[in-house]
Length: 491
Image (cartoon, rainbow, N blue to C red; front, side, top):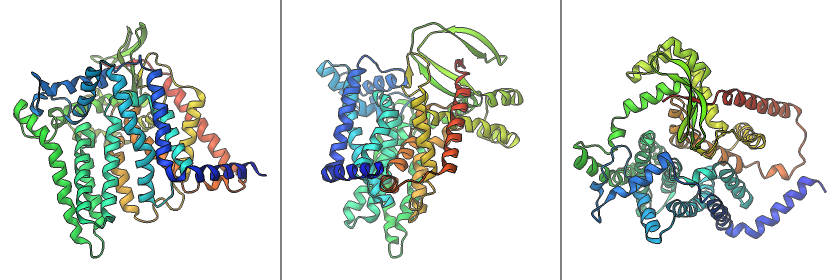
């Protein structure tokens, strides 16, 4: 019997056994792995931005009393620190490591999200069936590449989760028959999109584009009255923004739905855009060894040798950006208009810089975010990553993904991927491309053709095999070139 036919028969047998409870079973497997992974790394603490988020959660309590206005931090929006507050309270009450408490609670939520909500949403939106094995493939990809990210209370993962849940709720509302439930779905979606805006400033556009998605899904013949769904969306967002406005008015004397640092985003974002010219990407280093590195003296833009120890952010120089630096005479931009003028003046230089940012974000050489040694991952790890990228690129031309309702699906992807688009212009960190990777895994695991691969005799395709080999070779070569320059520090 053909080996692929045997694999297919085994798969069918497993699906028959687990099909009815596939979501719960896969979620259970996800949580079991994260439970093991948490205690295997229970000495790994919370660092840098993640540690700051956790510290900010205590700001809500003052003199033993809770109040939104007690939160007087102007750097981060209130919502993620607020969600971490119960974890802080529980950890202190139990006398347990707060990192462990967070990881177990977040693992439970993530298990339901990735094993149940994501596949069910894909089924609803793309009209494909997500069986047990496909769900298992999906969580395996998520855990293999991103399990370390789940150990840190950073806002990247919850931002993606809330954004995706908001999109799903808008889709569910567009087909729901009960009016009160339709309004409730959109109300919650409004809260979720507002929350992502408070998680990370770059998500501020999600809420506005969600309005377009509602209009597209509900402006059907005889359904124009459904545009009233924008009302519960706005109300839901207002409910989520109100505490932040109270915080701003009482502590900083200005009226805005965003944190003060988000409201004055120009300077911070422009600085990051300038840094993105000379840096391809960066990763956190928390080791204690003294290491010699090269850095740029920001006064005369010359490279000098220094010795450093962690914690510190390590940067990889951008060869195209360093050449562009000589043309620009510096990396500080006074306005977005000035940046745009330079882009128009040196378009190919900027495109080269952005593309290296994109590749760095897709390359996944430093999955731990905070590293005890700055050492890229192994060959097999990278090979699996490149293989997934190749087959997803190939599968995007498969008929069916955007066959019906393609415009709405495209808008949904834009909502998810806006942070990735903005990240191309700034200093790249791998976690900035997290939404893109999660979408890539969806297209790979839930591809309608993935089950057919094992049910038919596969014919050897020399041309496609050659393209795959060239693609992987190109990725390894480019990755090696980028990693050879690691150790540039720009602050």
